[in-house]
Image (cartoon, rainbow, N blue to C red; front, side):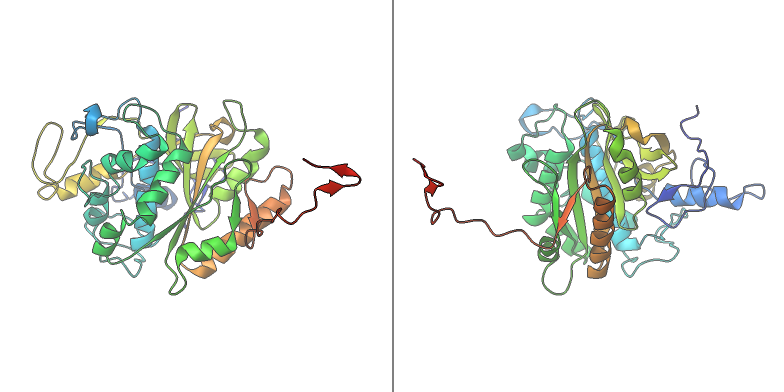
Length: 374
């Protein structure tokens, strides 16, 4: 079937587009014979940013690699999640592209931030100004095992993002854009990850609340595809208003999942190789970002949405949630708690108000029912 054709019932994405029934390409103005719902679908998903694999960028450290073709899809999928989260943060969920810079509908309080201001954080450059570039992600992720030329899993990538945000690697860009954002990584050494409400509060700061991006890496089975018992929960998560998507995909091929339609997931695919864009000067595969900002912005926004059965997903995933306010976080906690209650033996994530204090075994007796412990 056509990978860009969708079937009813209407898609349920973390966006105000729940009654859209058809799909098209690009974000051109609607013609007189274009059904309103089709155009609404187009404008809804045309606002999603897509980072593809690139060639021709500055060498990645000692590896001297100038392309991420064949190994960088998870990093690009993660960049897409961060990029779209930042656009939600700065522009609001109702923002749509209309072909003109900063011409927005229902703009958030931070709508004065330009598209290129956000996009420049992801340009393929080792400069600290581009703090979420593949160069800086690879450098900061070296301590977790990220090596240029080798495929990366969602769990390791989330650890790297957490390090970048919480060490201040992202603060320069955030301060430049006058809008800090906090990150909370929910990760366990083994077993089901636990979202503690108190730790979410700590990550967002005491007062005032910082908008919070929560990442939850999960492993949902040991076979090439996720255990079928998790499919309804994944579809429910994608319908939550706080969702900013999932880093995942098919085995060995990562994509960015942005929504759902019935039992199918909607995703952006980073596997089309494009020339890189780097700021300041032209070179092989590069473009002057200042001189051609509009063209660069156009290249980062998608014109095609793909779909596949949710049950075909690889078991290794990372769930993303954005909470602008404390109330948003509490609502997310309640939704995930209700989902865990509905699936008590196969829950995606467990919930608790705060971690249990560690037990002190030093004062315990070494004699148990007549047995002496040595």
